[in-house]
Amino acid sequence: MPECDGDTIIRFREVSKHYPLPSGDVVALDRVSLDIMKGDFIAIMGPSGSGKSTMLNLMGCLDTPTSGDLCIKGRNIRGMSDEELTLLRRDHIGFIFQQFNLLPLLTALENVQYPLILKTGSRECVERCRTVLQAMDMDEELTSHKPSELSGGQQQRVAIARALVNDPEILLADEPTGNLDSKTGTAIMRLLDTLNREEGKTIIMVTHDPAIAEYAHRVVRIVDGRIT
Ligand SMILES: Nc1ncnc2c1ncn2[C@@H]1O[C@H](COP(=O)(O)OP(=O)(O)O)[C@@H](O)[C@H]1O
Ligand SMILES: [Mg+2]
Image (cartoon, rainbow, N blue to C red):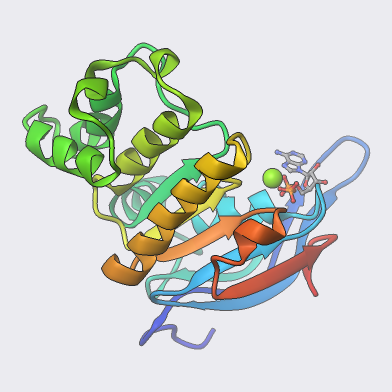
């Protein structure tokens, strides 16, 4: 596989992902090749079941290819141990989900602290967490609220703060506005746009909404596991 250094931050080369099922393998991705550059803002679009989340999960080292080469930050993930994949994910990748995926028993602040505690084993990171929440336009008094006491838009701001707290270069967002009304969705997209333009975050976002995809610089279309 050609080395992927320079400005390529994620490289897919003939990547396939099969899920074994008793009724036969599901081919979720079929020989996908794609280069993503540092600072890119990409929208992945395609019908339900076309392989969008599978692609995002591979980029996020939540899963590994069945075949082909996937290079993240210049390193081929083939042959990496689970521990190496966990470190790559923890230090370089932030995730944002449609369902926010906050821990319901923790406050907003504790949710943001959680990845830092996993990383450093220490809870002495309150200032950093407050700063990141503030940058997401979260009011100070809301930081002690549980997710159930926050609106959808506020929960997504907390989730973005959590994704950013380890300062990853790559942000992966699976339908980040899918559970939000269009006004709140627009506010969240403005935040992502600022993170891309002002902080140089590389953003890969799955969406089926053409208005949301307009925030991206490039649209990748996928049908039946293949880029079209
Ligand atoms: N863990 C899994 N086990 C079996 N099949 C799966 C699994 N995850 C996804 N699939 C299948 O892979 C295909 C692509 O799924 P997915 O990537 O979730 O699509 P999308 O996000 O575009 O809706 C679908 O046919 C789906 O049913
Ligand atoms: Mg999906």
